[in-house]
Length: 183
Image (cartoon, rainbow, N blue to C red; front, side, top):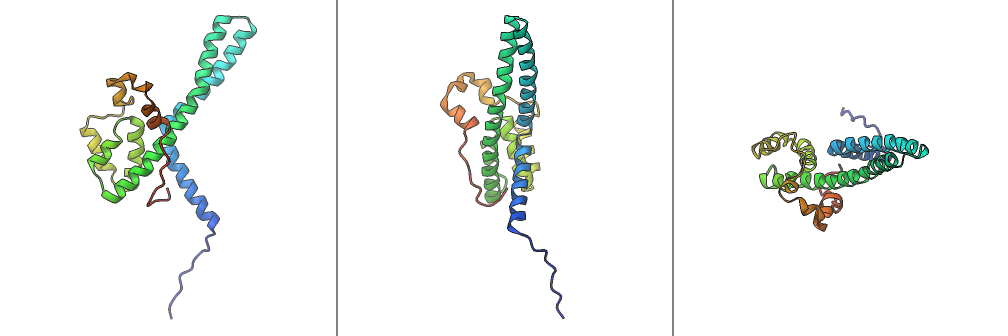
């Protein structure tokens, strides 16, 4: 007599919940440094808004101006951080597909070596596929360490931040639809 496997009926909603939950976890892991920047800048916004309002009420115009500018900075920085995280998530999905199709290739890793945020995103993709050791070794051989935060091109060519291409690649990366994975 053949035993039938007991299957728990899984609704489509539970499946979608799992997919979206795993995507959220990846999104948080990919942009951990940028998420921390967002939280810190929101704290700056709240703190300096409070002090700016206190300075305004006491007619201390110079303090009001200084603290007001810092509060505005704290309000604007999270927008840039979150746009950057979205772009890094697109890099993650594309790199994961490329690693899945080709295995670890230094050429693929080099596409995303320019900035710490890109390297962090690609490390998550490599970890998902069991390629983290090769990727970390490759980046270490290239001379990258944990403290290399600023993108390479900013050190060699600071005026690049004035170009349209820089802003497109940094904050407005095109949405990439993964060919092989749901998250």
